Image (cartoon, rainbow, N blue to C red; front, top):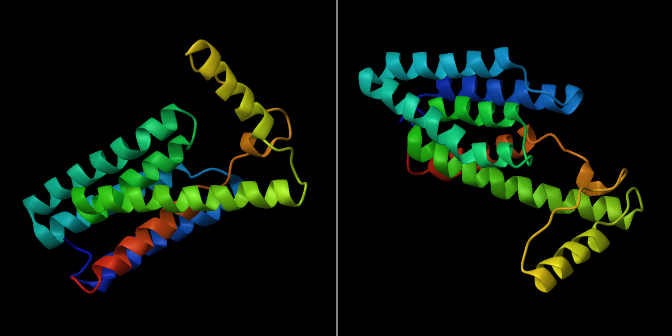
Length: 182
């Protein structure tokens, strides 16, 4: 796709991700105009550089990026802005790249979350979720039915972290992984 062919699209993709990270870290929101502009830019670049096939790849990449992050949004693990950002990233990477970068982003987000939880519990900045998870597990074993108990106020699991950082790390890792192949 575009990634191996020119540095200009990569620069625009890094700009998009960088702006999203800054916004997510400072305001805890990724603006719609940013994700919409990013998706439009990816579609346009794919069209200019690859023609109709590039536009189709961008559309499929958008749909794949959105599809991979939609369950996380519906379950409350990520925000809508995160799903829209991954969709915009998908317009640059195409369907396979969007899928792989989304999985890398989820892995990066999981690692960040583990460190986030560990830091908060270790340094007593939050209460531990262990008792709540233990009760949910005991209920599952005793009744055979899963239950969900919301985090208590102040518990680390009730806090959100800027997932755009994980998307930036996952997408960058994917691009570095692809670089020798390009």
